[in-house]
Length: 139
Image (cartoon, rainbow, N blue to C red; front, side):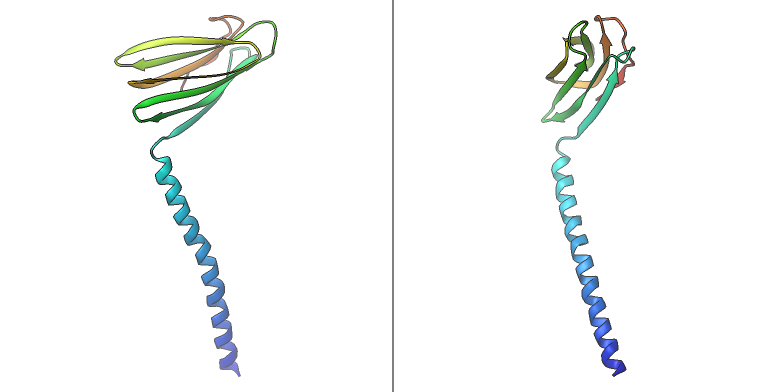
């Protein structure tokens, strides 16, 4: 009787252990597939980067795919009145390039380019050069 109970308990524990191991093995397989797919393009999410007076901010994501760097950004400030400004400083093909975009309310923008090595951004409010926040490297 004891041997029968011991064998039944052992068989039951092996069945439970087998069920517990199977989902873990399946999850490990799915994770490795996702990781190998994601390794082709690494996406860096950045922000909220505020202006100096905290009245505007930007956030977004930057990634590289097939030798080209892409940036999608979102700007937010109160609608009406003064505008928010986002600045990008890009090290491209051995020299620095600087450009900006203005918005009032909410704005979604994007840009891309080849030969980009570094990208910095910062946010200003009420003018191109007024109330600017800290500069952050996003790529």
